[in-house]
Length: 274
Image (cartoon, rainbow, N blue to C red):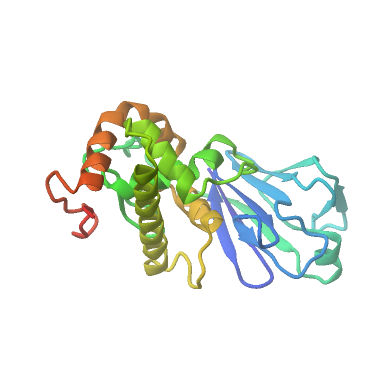
């Protein structure tokens, strides 16, 4: 099994294991790793994907090339749409500016022990059992904010390149209305949007409390990237939404009407009824 570590010249570091990926680019595009001060850097420029036996680099920019320095005297140009496959090694990656200014990304890949096959990997049912990612953030899967998190991340869960636009709070609220079969009135949509905004604030605060982010403001792109990157929201959660429609319908209707039992969360006793 591989561990791929990506380090930037300004001290940022992200670690990927097989099946995980990240996109780097300049601020403003919701990339996982934000790099500033480079006119040759696109908002979504490079995609790094960790594999079982190495890692892949794809230039997803439509305009500018990337350069891979193998640290053995070879500088490999990677034009838009190009892909480079690496084994377990260390290289530097960057645009022409990053290479010239000697501040490229350093990407290293090492082998790590395989996980114990006896460890349970299937997701728990939506009964309040929390997810517990490496970041130390805990989200209860039966909380209303969890549906908001899954719907926010939906476009990027469906598109690993993360080129799709993330939905705004009003669009998430409309999706909740469709999922739960609520009356499509202006008042309902306004109320749903208000609750989605509250959920997004709560999710951002959880990430700040766990020091996943250390500075504000936290954009929707940053939040979605963290939720996906730390395994809090996965494609499996997205696929299970139709199966749980009845449960979400009950919870969100109770939330709007103020009816139904008060809830206590599985992540420290924080109330979920609003």
